[in-house]
Length: 324
Ligand SMILES: [Mg+2]
Image (tube, rainbow, N blue to C red; front, side, top):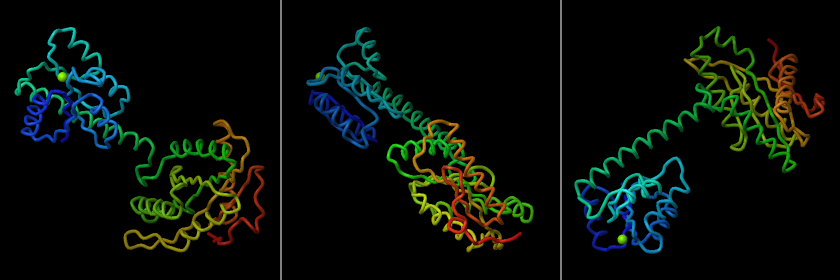
């Protein structure tokens, strides 16, 4: 583990360096505050444990500490200020400036080692907390079963995609896709098979759509896709996905299950949508198009544009319908 030693005194620096090396650290050396600050700001893997001398040229340890605390993130370094001053007011000033700890010169090796031990425990707790927070944030935005984004996260993404499309006068498609007769899969083969089908469906979505498309699970066997794409090309894209589902059976427990999907797509090309109500109405349009796809025999993609008029059927409704 890297540890930064910033001290203008060559002899003290050397002693510290030898001690830290002896304890298994990889010391990084700076001979003044400016060099230390640069080192911390330029490095992708800056040291997490810092031993800063108070009295240093260019930037002193106290100001360096303040500067480092200014661009505080979720993973702040552990800072020990080292100084010849031992009076209470100095200790207070150091801690107020953002130092985690304070140690006076000449430094006793046993005390320094113990203080560093406290620092390492703090850094480890901080690391675990960051991982836990990261996982919580991930779980709040993702669907457990498929790993896709959940409904809330997709709607949030839809908001920013809409703002983007309006700003750049670009087009967007919002699709709700629903696996036809999915309930039959659960009823016939049981929920574990149903879950495998949902996961496989999610994988096919990931494979078919592009990295800049947003794909999520809307709920149950319903999925949502938001694509920055021209309305005229949109049908082709969703039609391709419809075929991906129709043409390749889903494999689970030695079963090959034939499935189809229906989709309702709302294309968006620059009309004013500024609030949550507007977003809901876009989703409602996509839902209405899906309803139309279901009622015209399923295994179909239906498009609707901003005037809520269905596109001409012969052009924009797929023909791979199945009965049953
Ligand atoms: Mg000094």
